[in-house]
Image (cartoon, rainbow, N blue to C red; front, side, top):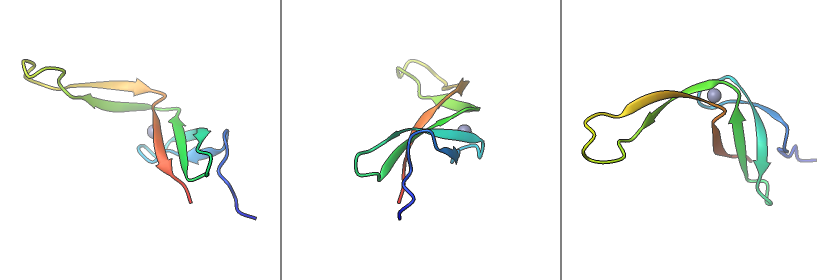
Length: 69
Ligand SMILES: [Zn+2]
């Protein structure tokens, strides 16, 4: 039996090695959305060319997609 990733599974966050869990899995089971429970620093690209610097802010509960096999 394949060990399918399923919603609610605990996984290690790829970004910060903290704890995350699966909040979504694609129908073919090849793609999963991981929600991290920690804060991430996120660099926001400048919305306009008139801004001279990018802003860095901490964001909690980031969701990102990963491929699962
Ligand atoms: Zn994380």
